[in-house]
Image (cartoon, rainbow, N blue to C red; front, side, top):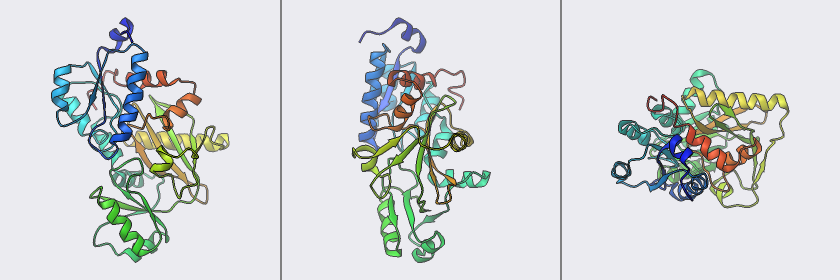
Length: 315
């Protein structure tokens, strides 16, 4: 597609960073390809970079004016890339260094929310010295084990016996040195996208899997996405306000997605914030944006717009 003069004037040359080396590489490749195709349709001058060990050299060689980050997981979503881009003086999309690092760390984000009085499920840090039976008892007998720094439900396992908990920790620890067990939440799961300060319509997730795992997210065709989510206006407003509060409390900006579950009593509990959500054909932000009236191409440009603010390199 031809480069639009108006787009060239507004954005200059845009580097789309995708792929990378994290465990979420395959998802990032798909997200990146969708975003690249969209920007080409919009007439944006771009260069696409599969982010490897020579990324800083590639950026120096290509000399973009700004960066659209489509890297998921460690190395792209954890603040390290954001810090490098700031040192290079390159504006970029999404949250800054500190917010990216904090949101990527499920343990410290939950500790932060607990400290400021935002609701999140009870949890425990798991190590090789953990008393498996006592931890399980303290958390109600059923838990979800999670690597603290992975996304896309990688390494997540339900456990309801001490032996299963130990095995789940071993599986998660193969991906991450920091592992948590979170009290099992049996209610409905929701996700809330945020786009430049606008809270998009929440989506309710339903799956016949034991939980919303990697297969349910990216491979299954029977996962159900309900938007409108079925809540009353009052409850939906409560959910949206909680999501925005959680997002802002970590210092996040630009765009992202907040995952929330309701417990058996209907109380909303925060799970995590994603600062570079997926943009695949199974992804949730494009679904919510569509209900809010944005086409995929409009959504991508609004994400790119988050690199334009005057303080984009002062975060």
